[in-house]
Every structure is written in structure tokens, then in C-alpha cells.
Figure (cartoon, rainbow, N blue to C red):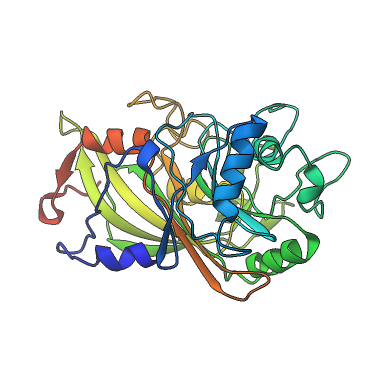
Length: 329
């Protein structure tokens, strides 16, 4: 993403962040060299039409009109970009991507359909089944995770985007806060991931002990870079701010991989400690940026988002540790 060009200052082996403490209601998203701010989706017809007019202004597949919102409902999505073929959406945490037995309302799909005037036919139904109704969904992030997703409006766009995911050409960057400091400033975790033998909602890394089990494991690659190191006020608890780039997109990949190397995500009750040191309610993980080729125009598309306010507030309360002063554990 183009915003990374402004972040090339170096402090020893770590990259400092800029504009880290921006609040969610002033989040800016970047499309190529044009700024596009996402607007909160309002389910009322009047405001939906007003927003749709703003987003579409300037012609099909342009999406470069600035749309601003002074306030954000924590449980409402943002339409970051929209044209005749795709949408790029910012999903707050604690919002499921599509309806299921455990999430029946206010999902990402339902809010997008509301934005489109209630017409679900304006989204691709390529991957919909009688059991799972997920129009437009090309990929997903965990319901507790915030960040950017692409959605498809028609079958042609959906097939093209799926192919890009299958070829691993989609660029996805996540920011997370982990327990403990890292030994290396950057690295690659190349460990296959499979379903847990008794807990269908959990994934496990492939280890020597599992090689003889009759389980299906898939290749998984996570590239990480440590951006900043922290301790809490006592100095006893250590944390790392980490940027992860995914080559593959397995379920819970970042959470499984970082736990596997002894750096579980802060707040991840499923894979790490059940303690919530900052009372944030879930893992501190944000899908920060997306890069892909537009399925119709062939144009390179790039989107970037600021960290959500809960994430930034946690970092504000921590004390940064310089590289030479870190105690690696």
C-alpha cells in the first residue's frame, strides 16, 4: 500500500509506526493515490441513497470520491469503495461475516444488503448453499477481528477474485499485539495447519506428533515483522506489535502460527491465555490493508486503514522498549 512509503524511517531493526493513535471515527482509507474515507452504513433508505450517491459519484469503478462520517457506530460496517463489480468493506470486530446458527443478525452480509436497498441479487451468489447463505463473500476474517474485506457483486468478479486468492496474489497485511518479545525482527513461519481432532472450531499446527494422524493439513505461510516492543507499567509483562503478511489464508492462521512460536495474540482465549489484560474482549488483531487487481479493469487496487481505537488505546498505555534494551524470553 502506498501509505507504507511514508513509513520508511528506521530505528535500529524496528519500523516505528506513524499516525498510530488515530481514532476509529477518523479512519482514512487509501485507494492508490486517492484518499477514500469509509462511511458508516445506515439502514434507513434516505441515508442509504445519500451514501450510495456519494460513493458512486464520478462514474463506474472510480470510487475516488471522499465520503466522511463524523461518528461511527461500533457495530456498523463502512463501505470503503464500491463500483459495479466489487465492494471493499471495513468490518468492525464482533461482527460475523455472514449469518449462521450462532450469528443470526447484523452480520456483514446483512448490513451490505441493507446498504444495497435490501436487494440481495445485487451480490454474487456463487458460494451460497442451502446451509450457508453468504452472498458476495469472497473471503472472511474472524468475527472478533476488525478490518478490510473484498466482496463481489457478480459471478464474473467473484470467480476472478477467487482465482487471485488461489494463486496467492492478493496482498493482505494484518497488525496484531502478541505476548512476549521476538528473537528476530522478522521471519517466516512455514507450518501446515489442520483441523483439531475434537474441536471443530479450532485449528492446530502440524507437528511430528501429528504426522501419523489421519488428518488433513494444508500449507500455511506467514511472514512477520516486529514493529515495536513494549512492556506494561510493571515491566514484567512483555508485548510485541507485529505486522503479518499472508501468502495463504487458512482459518485462524495468524493466531495458530504465532501461538506455535510462543507469541500468542493478546486476548486470544482459544489459543492463548484466557486472561484479558486490557479487558478488550478478544484477540488484538486488525486486517489493516488489502491489495488486488480489479477483476474487470485490471487496475491495481490498494487499500489501507488506521488501527481501530481500542487497539491504539492499548498501545498508548504501554511503554516502548528499545531493541538493545529488550529482554528476549
